[in-house]
Image (cartoon, rainbow, N blue to C red; front, side):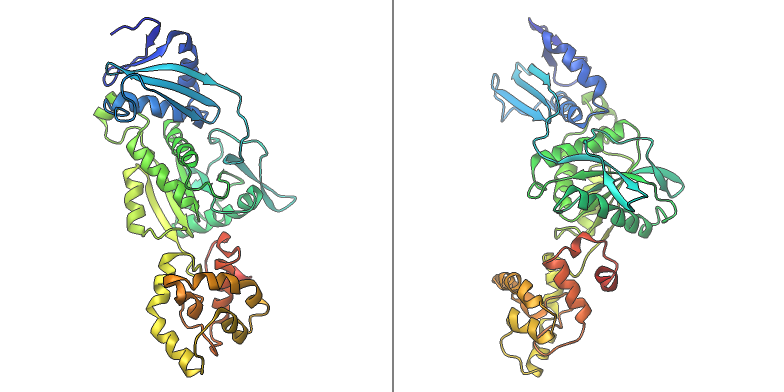
Length: 398
């Protein structure tokens, strides 16, 4: 099959791909550099998926309809024609900083005693930065949950990385390196398509570069990870020929994933299955059971409602409200800080939160037990306690 003004890309099987002849040098650049720029990796995934799946895009792209895709500073326009994909436009611009979401190198500064991120974003992992991992080495990377600033996430994530992979017996505190990679996502963007596309490309890029990676997924970062894993599963970075030979071709292989304080109700079983489908290995999960925003924590609270009601009745309490529960417990000025948040939780099935406040389910009027757990619950639910690695109330409040 030949088309005037177009050059056919080399594919042995699957849907034929054509690029406009004057755009072919740009494609050659993408092909050569996609292992060092994850935005280019996203473009390659799109092209390989079009080649591998002859039906991909048919419902959204009837013959002749043009579709545009933007991946960072790279833009592509294509349409379908007689079973082939025609790339009409492919351009690589200068990276522009529309938001701070992206990949950053983070190094430990001995003089300041802090982990500091580089000002400029990077587009691939540094293969020379690997920590010991069991009897081998691996690059360590974190997907940040909700933080106010990139610098806050950069300084907090090593606490999670070390706590997680020490707990999973992949590393000891003596094995830690002085640099890791941080995928920072701005507030409100953890469920965005951009975050998922970029994260999926970074994972697939690492596989192409034969780089072992140990991931730490923190808090709200689980949403970006779940969407990225589904994308990797649905659109491996491999063409039709490679997929025909190996069902796992183009997926994210030789990478482990540990979840810390995930802001979702997903079980270990479901996350393990999702990892496996994308070629990843589930390494473990550490939950913060003082964060009442997590449904699993609220379920545990609900199991102890009978006990809580009995305590409240025995203490002469009637209807428990946020204000009198906190003032009775004498938690400093917590009632002023938390009352509005607690009252918000009173809606629907969350009334349990007002009576219990923390997962133990025993906080109510007149009950002064577990005040440390109470304070931890306040800090995690309404403060920034969830930014910390959770190993217990004392460490969290220290």
